[in-house]
Image (cartoon, rainbow, N blue to C red; front, side, top):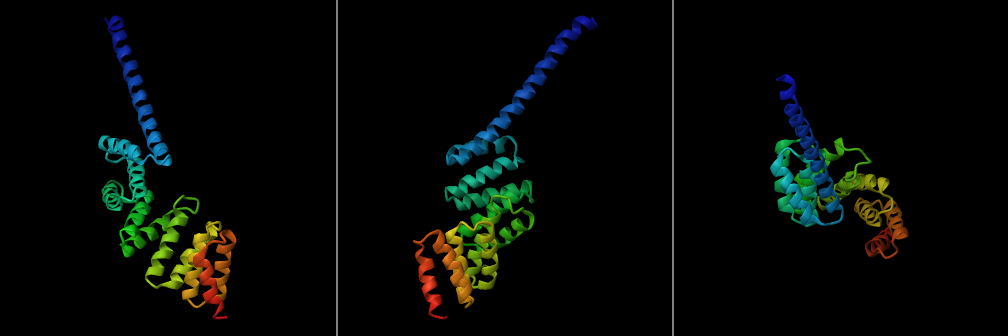
Length: 214
């Protein structure tokens, strides 16, 4: 009885293990597909896959991240914010969601809220993280809007330190310094921008303004 009854049980056990293995592989493939679609700018397709993943597992922060990034790229900022807040109910500490919420709030004109999210993000992120520099750029822009030009100088200096190839970052740093009446250092920043892109009209006009004060 044990020998004849054991074979079917063993067969079903092997089938169950195989089924679980296939399921895990399928889930991994879906995650990769969603991220790949996002990288290929196929945002609608990425969103569809992520929504399916979240429905199957509401705690799937990878799916939430790709979903919100896709919504941001489509400029669907309010939806990105709403989904970001839902994601934080599952995990309040995922820095990918925190940064994405900062972007959503920034484009919705909620500067204080956006700044708070970016500050939380950079306090936990590493310099090698993809959105680390971008967060400092956004913080600099917010400080400029708030006329906190010294704060903007600090934030944008951090941005250009990590991305010295961005002419637009150097231009905004020059403007922040110009507003602080630090005309010589503003010209240095404007010159950096013009060296990278000679057609930066804001850098050209900013440099001309500063030169009149020297």
